[in-house]
Image (cartoon, rainbow, N blue to C red):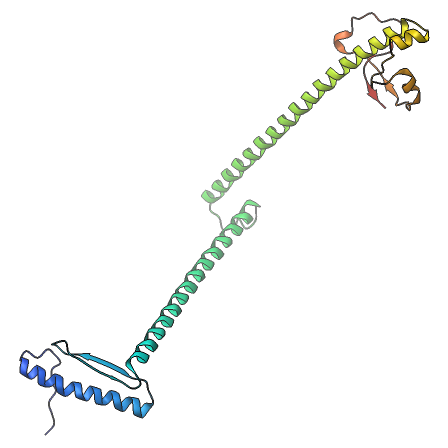
Length: 235
């Protein structure tokens, strides 16, 4: 006659529970010992009774079994973390590829390509986007042109002021030149050239094809027939 199945649940009777614990504990320790011998396995077993008493078995030593367990657990956690990190970066790469594909498709639409699949609303949105971009480009271009015009205007004003100063220097030069022809007068009033050279130094400077024309604010000035045309032009 076979043994009937026992329902696996807590035994309420304390005496029966203690007897069952002793029998099954001894059987568990015996099986652990047999497993280590038959299969050349490193086995460590620890059992605490309901009263807190410890029963243990180790095929080598309990310390070596625990150290090996901790190392294996740590390696398993590291492998799990590495796998999780790999999965994270794979998802990120897939998301970036999807965004790149959308950007390329949008760029082709902006270039007027592959518009057959767009609806009327999509085409209107694309048109508005192009108009806004074109408006911004024109505004930036106008700003750059305005800045260049202002810069050229300032340079023109500086050149005009230099032209006026050059005109005054030429007048002083002509007055000193007409004041006397002897060497003492020439030494007393050195003949000044527009470039700060004396008439003697000017003889040694190559001719640069310079022409002087009168500035606008000096048009009413009465010039002598021998006065040069004022202003500076380089040929």
